[in-house]
Length: 600
Image (tube, rainbow, N blue to C red; front, side):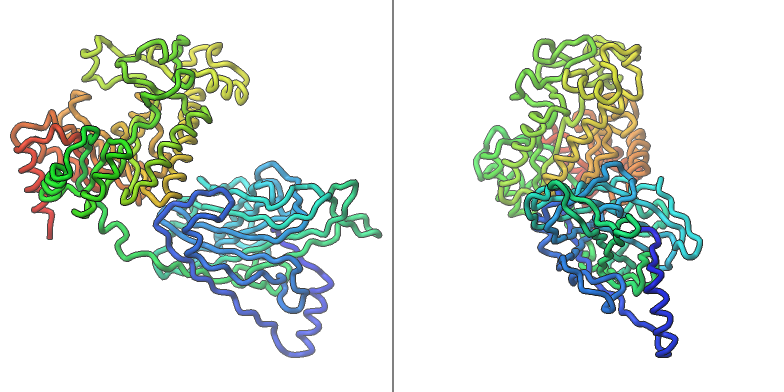
């Protein structure tokens, strides 16, 4: 809310304080913000188990404190913090749900709203504000200093990556009934703060924050709500301002009056048990329990404690307890956008209008689906849901999270008799009728009718964004289920965008497995170091990169050792091997030797 001062009250307050010789005092509130190691699913419902770890704040009071009436509708908030986000939730009692503003960065406090104010370093300068109404419309801004110090609000500034949703217990803008409340759920990426302050909290840090609720008096006219007006002036009556920590004046922009948020509860070494060495393996051919026991015991003995297992739920339920006995983490290796049991009408279409249902692209098993289709998203989520119910599973590993290869790695051109030094319409996919319809609705043209659409950056980014939206849903769902989510991706984000329409540095996954298969690109082993270095420089600081190595071309001499050392020289957090069936005795000895050397 911008600076608002009630002149009459201000004058009376000055007179009172002058006569009494005392200064009004207020004690800023304090709140302990607990750590969660799971990414929350933001839907406004507040039903995630993680929210049970957070305590509710005191109910809000009037902005001026005890001198003003107690708010007649209850408001409270709670908070969590995690590896990637600051989480804020609020519950607002409301018998008359009302909102009118739909445009982002409209002045939202002209409606009833919920507001968040954040000063990370507590110096009263360079702070942030976020407002949300019951429609979920957002308004965020950045201030270099308060208005009374001639500060300027930068309304063009945005919390990049902000996620927020509201949930209504009642009917919006319908005066014919009585409503119950509305809830707000917010996730603010740490990167949004670091862009200006460079600050991300650690255990024990304290930030200055406050929370406000703007509430207008309403009249009912023909079953619709309208602000009450002053009969003499014809202007709306002043709004009510209810806050978590009192300000002592009708002015939220006094940061030194805000409350204190203490960040606490983060484990000293959250990732201490994260496997460093992983291996892809298929378990569709079920061995006996004794055979699996010997397999996992052997892998554990050489230092491989992360397993990316492709299997159905029946097999996974049998092998996971065996792996867990050896303290090995299992991620279900799942083909995502490419699915053998996809319905024909879901399959992707190329620039020539040919569907994968009717025409092969490279290999018979390429059955890539259109990521923008709601039916496809539901189909994938149902598979993830079934996997998430398996006891002992640590995560879900997504493979084929992309479109059909637009351009194959150069080392594979001869295999398919192609020279792909340009975009070929036969292999330029993503033209499903639903995708084209969405694009036309936004940009006013069917991609089939556009000139040189293959090279149009807007069309490329549109397809990337549609896949990103789907990945976000999958990520949030998996984290909500209490599981990690990872993905096998092409070597670098830049290569991925060009070759397979994959924008993986935007996904915010728990960690990544780039397939740095140097032989596919006719490169030498040292290329691995450069690729990993590029990934670590591109991703945010917390992102974990496990370099995927292709075992069949690393069989002789010390090639595998050289490849592992190259990955670590580039900054890799660990190594993943493709795959178990290609692992030979020489490679086992090299992995074991490196693991022993790395142990303290």
